[in-house]
Image (cartoon, rainbow, N blue to C red; front, side, top):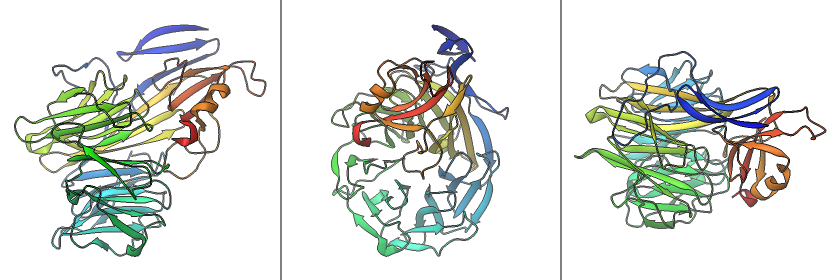
Length: 446
């Protein structure tokens, strides 16, 4: 076996070669129009990921999106608008159009058919939600959950456990039995100072949840109780993501002069945070990491026509400007797709035209196959997919294999994340050089 350094699409990677098999990870384009990064001080603009502009939607202020699997996804917008795709975002169809005073600020696809949207009635000042159980063909009546506060993002960790952020009041609504009826939800005042929350929040199937804004807040019991501390940034935070119990990132930014954004990182569960890893000319409104090294930060300000998608392959030490969108990017989601990972991002510009971007992080090679029967996407229904291993069991299980990370680099001591594993020929039950995808979590699924 030899390890070679290759450059593809101006993107430096490590490729691992064996006779008859090569595995590497590359940005993939489907040939549709894309926008590439432009030079900005302090950014590495050499390479990065190719983001395809899948949709441009006039008079649509897109806020959030959620994919149930690699094909079916939903995007929500102001004025009671919902879009749906059944072909991985190649086309989007409007399935709800209520108009004023309804505003949808969160969507969670619990399955292909079971979807919840959350937001507010702008006339009454109330927080509302709405369910569909048939993929949007029909919808339950609009339900008022909070009579005093608007609602924003919503996430379900599994089919029963869900959280809706009452972001402007520093609280959440939570359910442990599916949340179909108002009586299924209970309110928790997370931040007693009633500081607001902003950006995306992270909610895992193990019950851990993180919210950011004026304060940084974490829960280990599906949002029943919370630990509240000062925001990672001295100003405030906006958007948060954790890949395990230790490694997390939060974004933020301001729209008052000077307009700018930032990202911070923790490696000890939020006990301490780094300084600003990057300062951008637009507020960062959402962050999402696929493992401890590969992540994305998105944001913008439609008032000043700035917006961008950034990526990092070293945990945030350095960043690439992937796309200068000129739009305020608000929400992201991802799905494992065979031997690849698809990501989508939504936003809108100063003419209130919505946009949807997509990129694919693909492992290309010979003998790629999946291993196991569980879904690697925390909080998504079980389906055919990669093996999920604990950090402890992976040491023995993968001892005779070559492990590659999501960027195609060989890993000797894998931390929790998504990996591609090449079985050595002595694995009697497998063909030589078979490559399989695995997900490693911490002991006990943490």
